[in-house]
Length: 188
Image (spheres, one colour):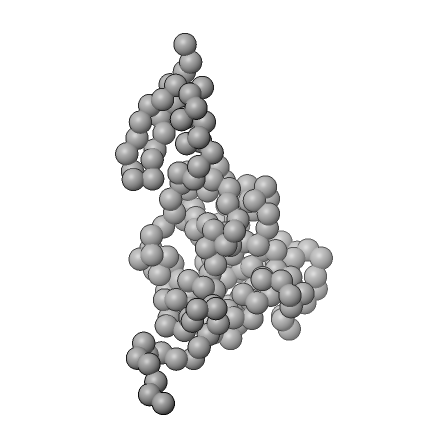
């Protein structure tokens, strides 16, 4: 007889299943972790004063460069770039690690592969930051749970630029700042 495992479903309910059952294996392969809802993400963005971008790139073709540009130009945040292989990104000093930053960032925005997220979370815990924001397309459920168990707020598989622009009325279909605040269509 196999051991029973308790699984939390996306609707919040839990169920116990034999660990070797096909359904238990399927549910384990699916995403069950749920991060902060829209109101909580808005609150994170409203209260933050600084953002450190881990995995920032000096290459203009990389998404971290685009996000860094947006945050510098369209937000109130002090933005720090963390990349041990760069000395400068977007005209600012690049730092080799989170411990080298001049302050503890309010948000650590992560552009690293999913397998690197646990070590980034350990670095975040070591410096005392409170929020880890893992970029769109990056998912490591165990790391998210580990971070939360250690007191972190974890946002995962969401772009901080898209979320900031969405909450501040400057996002169009392609994710670019439209500069338009109103939802009313302009008359021609």
